[in-house]
Image (cartoon, rainbow, N blue to C red; front, side, top):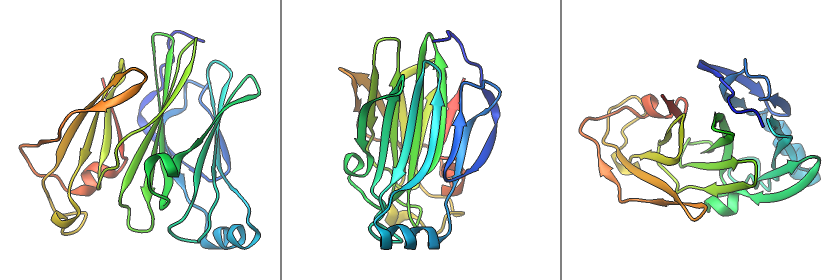
Length: 226
């Protein structure tokens, strides 16, 4: 695996469901926004009991992540799944919906970080059609192993991480009863989550000093800081 992949910091690209994103190409933006298909795609999948390919993500180190939805309803029951493949062999099938504890979440954003021979893929799932709650899954890949983790759900939240330290993540969230529209400022809390024994342990939430409009936070729901 290459020691350093420098991805474009300031750009974000929209991709449709079913597209392969090859992040071995270091000139791609490091954040991808997924554009959901029309409702007719979900209607067909539900009627025919078929999976929907959300996308494939090719990573350095001969890893591929295949992302699927297994919808049981056109809205609100997506059954998201992530399949991790190494050298053409499936090494993990991860039930995203069960791990996050919510079937209404559909993939909205993906982001990649790379440092010191390690890769981390961040998947941001968003509740449909209301945009709440938000859930995050991380896939950390080193030369020796791949670790998949789900983080606590947020309300109009985001995940913040520094590009050189994957072991600490901040989760931003508000409370649904405090939101008066996504453009109106409201109070936010932040939880610091630290990697320990291959999983994230999160501290109690701390209130932020100022107010933020949810649209300031969730578009995108992943922030990578230097």
